[in-house]
Length: 199
Image (spheres, rainbow, N blue to C red):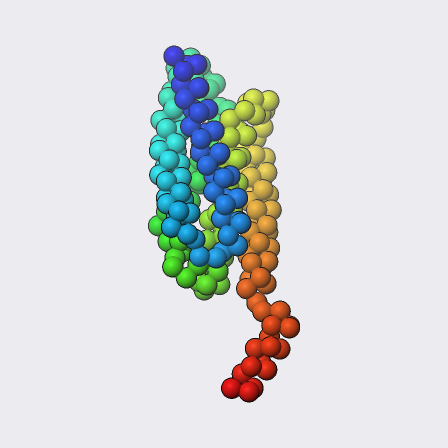
């Protein structure tokens, strides 16, 4: 029974992370421009599947914890890596709510993501960075068996916060590059000024 639960847990994680990386790459290629109807449909479909996968992860994860506790009630909950993983999954779950109700409408808006106010772009980018980092780190914690009963909660969370910081920097630089792509070049600006001068 435990093997089946682990298998279901692994499948849910693989589906979620696979869809996450595919959609992140697809959104990066758009550079914040207006999404096509097909792209919006694919994004919505991926979000629905990831929501189901997240529910499956919680159910199978809690089932594994319960089973582990029943097998070793004295020491199982003393594993600080377990609590770190719960913290990361809780973060990505709350962040998922923000993605669904805040970021998703901005990314799929009719004018394109790059046209929304700058502070809203930053918030959307941050939720995206938290999502990618949290999913990948949660999956890593699932296979990091050497950390069982050896790694401190603070040590694991320090690494997690460091990864989030790196992800925020990358997201910020990506936004800057997208904005630079929206600005006219000097030649284009000169041509625009010239045309306006003779109008």
